[in-house]
Amino acid sequence: MQTVSQRILDILRFRIAIQTIKDYWKSTLILTLLFSGMAALYAGMFPAFEEMMVEMGESGALDSFAFIPGYEDMASYVGFLNMEMYQIFWVLILGIIIGFLAASSIAKEIESKTIDILMSNPVSRKQIIIEKFFGLLPMVLIINFVAMLTVMMMTIAIGEDLNFWHLTLTHLISLPYFFSIIAIGLFISTLFDEKMKASVVMMAIVVAMFIFDSIAEMIPDYETLGLISLKHYFKPYNALKLGQIDATGNIILILVTIIALIAAMFYFDWKDITF
Image (cartoon, rainbow, N blue to C red):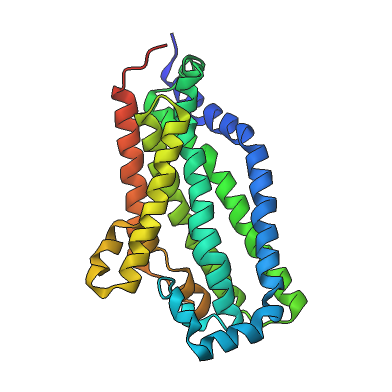
C-alpha cells in the first residue's frame, strides 16, 4: 500500500504531462516552423505592400475590414502585422489548431481504448486533466515565443520601426487567450468518446467566437455579442501599437481557463467510461 509521501511523489512526477509533451513534440515542431515561417513572410513582405496599403487607405477600400480592430492603421508596419499576422492567422487559425489538439487529447484515449493505460497511473482523474493541460502548455509557449523572435529578427532585417517591448507584451497576453482555448478544449474532450467529434465541436466554437466578435466590432447594436467571445478579451493591436494591456480582459481569460479546467475535472471524474 502506498504511503502518503509516495503518492505525493507520484503526483509531482507529472508522468502524464511529460508523456503528453512527448506525444505532441512533432506537432509542436511543425507548428513552430509554420507560424514562425508565416511571421517571417508577413513581416518581410510589408515593404512590397506598403504603397498599395496607403492607396487602399486613401480610397476607403480598407473599410471592408472594419470587423478587424486596428484595420485603419494597415498602411503602417505595426498595422500590417496586426491585421495580417495577429488578427487572422494568430487569433483564428492558431486558435483553431490549438483547440483541435486540446479537444482530442482525452477523447482519443477513450476512442483508442488506451484510457485504461492512462488511468493505470497512480493519480486521480482530476490529476489526469491537470497533467494534460500542463502537457499542452509547452507547445503554446514554444510557438508563441519563437514567432515573436522571428518577427524581431525580420524587423531588424528589413529596417522597419517596431517597439520590441510592445511586441513582447503582445505575445505575453497571447498566453491567457491560448490557455483558455486549451482548457475549453479539454472540457469538450471529456464530453465525447470520439476525438474527431470533440475536435470539430471545438473548432466550431473558436470560429463562432471569432464571428460573434467580428459582428460586434462592425455593428454597434450587437456590441454585447462580443462578450461571449474569447477574442473580445484579447486585444493584440492595443498591445502592439500602444503597449496597452486590457487587465480586465486578461483576468476574464484566466477565470475562463480555471472554470473550464474545474468543469473538465469534475465531469471526467463523474463520467462513466466503458473499457
